[in-house]
Length: 174
Image (cartoon, rainbow, N blue to C red; front, side):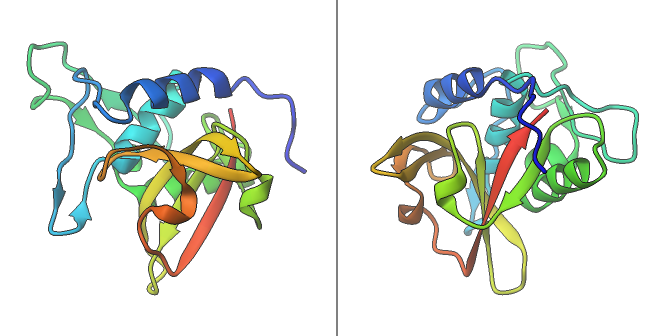
């Protein structure tokens, strides 16, 4: 059962998402979309999770972190795959939840109607690859509205984003 006790601040995560959805935070590297591959979606979600109180994970086999070098440019920053790649972030959250590991956790639920602001949606292709991710930033008429990067979007219906073969819905906790 998904524990309701939670140190994840959905409000802080959503406030961060709303603030930086359309204009990315210059304190982090922005990953441009190239030929419909890559992009900044998971990096943006990781920033939202971190803003919501999810601690970075440095010393385990399931690492999740971003290292801002503190220089005037972000080209020298470093990060883990799980911070910047949607597929890797999805599995980090799932594994952390299933094994009750330190850090952010995601419980997969069957319906978008079970989500609340601060939860995540992952977009999956026919090969099972999670190629895009978004954060729920509002609910309107029982439909989750999402915000994401690559393309930059604020409070759009989750089914108005990237086309996907399957959607994965994760309830977040820390």
